Length: 264
View 1 (cartoon, helix red, strand yellow):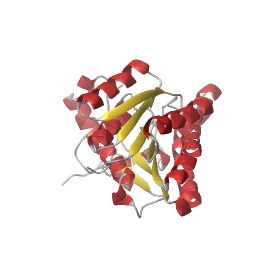
View 2: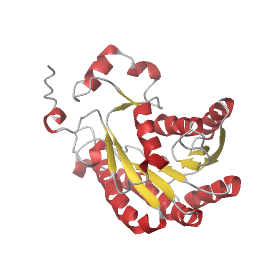
View 3: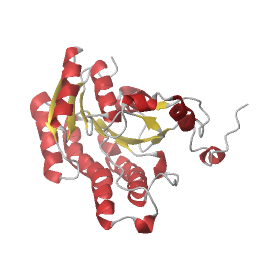
């Protein structure tokens, strides 16, 4: 198993990419700390992991609150003795529209969760990983961190781009301690959440629309991102740090972004 003997924290793992990654980490041998703000959903993920023979606990935390993140890391080490992997996954889209139209409250919340949350994760994980002799931190950015979109917004684009810069700087800072810090940039990904039931993503018109603006003719799935994160969490990526791994089906390739895909 690719994460045998490792301890991993996954923020925002009550649904979507985080949930899929937590389940995959457990299947690959990691002891997983599931974290999020919804207790019932988090405990359900833990039950699924345990039912499959894995080890996991749930810890409620708001990534934008320093005390919560500090307590999350402390609880992980207290329970499992160390920290090997942190996936800074928690994030949200607070506003879609023009930059100047975004309310200040929306901006503050988007930056606090998406960017400050990553900073706090790194801040509290690094000391434990130094004590552990190394580790891997992966953060969830977005293709909208490198390309603009009418479906994005100011705080989302700024925070996701900020994650890329923060990844590079922290990777440089902590490489001497054998801590690898990378990020993933997902494209359009189908996931079940509060606003999108599973049935929505299987509608033919949705699949066709979502697949029309990328070279690879498939719907992006949470598993596609989870396996990318798994690679960066595992020892297979021991020579990879400061990298931004794009997982978008090729959507950020120039003309495809404008919807001018011309399949042969």
